[in-house]
Length: 108
Length: 119
Image: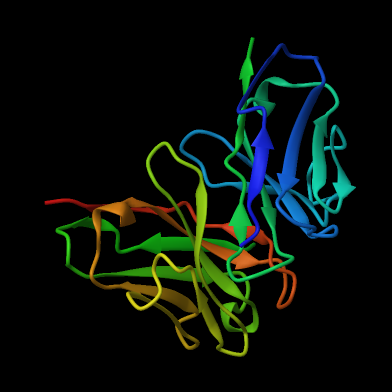
């Protein structure tokens, strides 16, 4: 089973700041990684797939990078609606499909 | 517009059974891979099961032998039969459509249905 480790657990930032979230895989997943956003009381939403492709309707301020075992989600300039929990997920080696533990982006 | 609507959650004692349903609209669920993902209260996401367009099924080790994923093509509905429930099965259960038949990311999600297992 591929374990995904996200860091930091919590990121405290102000609107307008840049957010950098990390996801590290226990073994290579090539570029088979996605990022999701989840707000309280809501279902997750797909943001990025295959490491760097934005899903339909996702703003350009969200970008993904990385390959192998190290991945980054960057939010270039935080807006009020971006404060949420973010999860990474791999599809390289299944079952099981696995998620990271999440990073909470909170208002500083 | 793709929509997924779960139902069937509720309160159950350990050892009991529940069947969750997920009514799909805006697409043909049997032509896609469909999945169940759960989230325990205050915790992260955990993949539970997937059914491919071919009908092949896969399960997380934590539910293998207790849960069964299935679908009704005529009703465009996905199911999760949950038997021998345990306290650790308490979670919001989401139905999710996979990105496509071989690219297993979750591109559409339902609103979730809460399952509580407690004595």
